[in-house]
Length: 580
Ligand code: PEP
Ligand code: MG
Image (cartoon, rainbow, N blue to C red; front, side, top):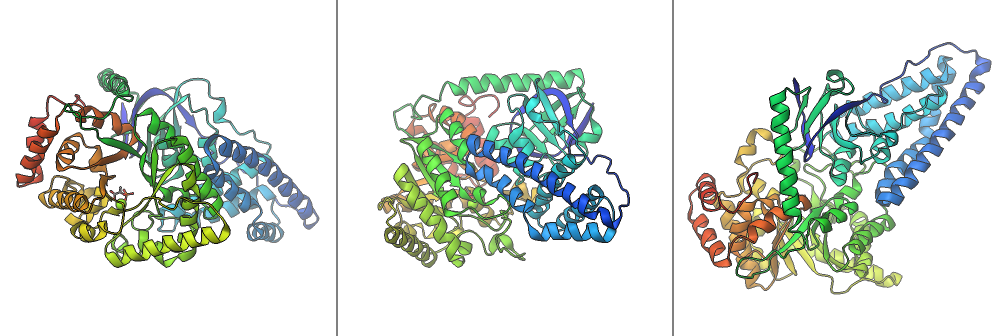
């Protein structure tokens, strides 16, 4: 048995034979000299291969738009733009004339240089763009060399897809029913591969380094998308252990699935609202399937993570409208662009900063880029007539900043009216409470908005001075730290005193122990990844309000995260499933 550790990028466990996808490995590229009189012929060959590549990409683009929405088509639109880029074409033609070598070799050298330049950059998102260049150049080379590309659409058996680097077109085109998991050498959490794997609910471990060197076709592979382990040719004991974990997960899933149609109400009848967080519009299927009452957080920045052009007002409008229409009667809270810090978006002018988490990010960035912010606000306003839309500003740190954001929204409404575009005038507006200063003055902020949503991922980071992405200090990211609990209680109480709804959309809302405490503190709404909704529903259905209040009061008296956690584990041990 061999084992590799990578980045857990999409949850779930799968066991299946390996299918090693080496299609993206370079074929042997011929290299030979040509005469000056042959340059034109070589160039024409190149242009004809580009036309074939354009046809392929157009088919893929149309398919992606049809199946998954315009924003996924944008990946291929960016590829098409690259095919027409005069700078790229001039550089290749110049190199062909000067080197007097065959076009395959010239193209190969050119793409290697561009990819290396991108990979040498510090920015992981720009590094990822190398795979787009690779995708296009590889496609043209295949046409030049008359190589048929193996299509993952033709897979006819269940497999674990082991690849060096999965390209966006591979992900869109593959037979998703047959791919049980992904084990990929390259990629990180913000790569297209990770984003799409989560959206398709396929377990995935990325950044494995050498998976393709370690495994042969048809060897059994276990992919643990929760922990990030990939095991090749597991021994009997390991296989049996993972099969048990997997079987338990299936039973648990089925048991939990039966909760989807039941209300999230306590034993004494208090109804709790459970919503889901989404990153891409097609996740709305999963939201409804898991029994959530709408979307409490649509992280709109994922629309901006595509390479090439930033999403236009029309494509954003289409994405928001699609989410609202898919949800029907259920509401969707659309958060305005939350970039910067750990969320780097290509093409936006975010320079390297010394302290990015404390720097030019989220609402601060949007208030500085008026055009970008106005475009997004108009797109959300226009979509608001197609369902129950709500708008939410991230990273608000004080009243003046909130006033500026609200003034921007008013300006967007004025422009919609000027253009004769319809929108919902009384669209609810709220803020994320994720900076300690905002939590401390929730009373002042609550007078200006319709709802508060506590973002504990950042609130804990900033309160406890713990970088949420740094694995060395991850043990200090403590939801039951007394400082965090007191801040949360304060926000809920101040919000209620001001008459506004208080929800939570940080990961803490998906922790069954925390859910009981939050319920006892009076939280109105919970929002979490769709897959977590059934487990939280189950624990809510196991307690009474009186009991939740008593548990919350006891936890608020504890002196540390460890003490609070030990108490909750003991107190709730009969209410949770084995794996919680
Ligand atoms: C949070 O900070 O808790 C939150 C929900 O936002 P994000 O994880 O997108 O920063
Ligand atoms: Mg946040």
